[in-house]
Amino acid sequence: MKEKIQIDKLQYERALLEKGYKYVAGVDEVGRGPLAGPVVCAAVIMPLGDGEIIDGVDDSKKLSEKKRVKLSAEIKERAICYSIFEVSEKEIDEINILQATRKGMKEALLKLEIAPDVVLTDGNMTLDIDFPQKSIVHGDALSYSIGAASIIAKVYRDNLMDEYAKIYPEYAFDKNKGYGTAVHVNAIKEKGLCPIHRKTFTKKF
Image (cartoon, rainbow, N blue to C red; front, side):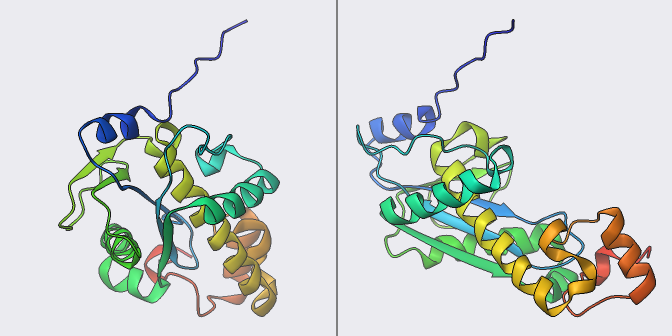
């Protein structure tokens, strides 16, 4: 049986604390790929002392919905500060998804009650910010702070799409969260687009 390699999710944070940085912010986005709804970005500064770490924080996509919801509540409760920023489907159509993601991450960081000393971002995303920054590919799985941001962003966006499902039930947003499932695509073909669809993502339908 293959042994599971234990990833030290605090390696990046620890290295930064050793350099004298105090407030380390993790930032991540959820919803770059869907055909509908906003892209949601979250930034969070977590306490990093012994005994303050929340067990089970990981890339939000790897967790069950129940676990994510529980962890999101714990992260919000324990965070030094956190913020969430959404960029609408209309703005995604205007400026494109990459620029929308960059904007959302930047705005989420600027909304934090405490200015971070350094920022960890997921992917290879360089942001137009005045804080020192380090981007980490697969950061949501490798960094505790980015993982925490990914969880609160995912739970927030999922709840939002559940609400949209009540307004536009024919697209089953509560099930697909706006992603292009067969049911969703068929609904677009039959009924056309609704106001929260991204027009630049749905041209082929």
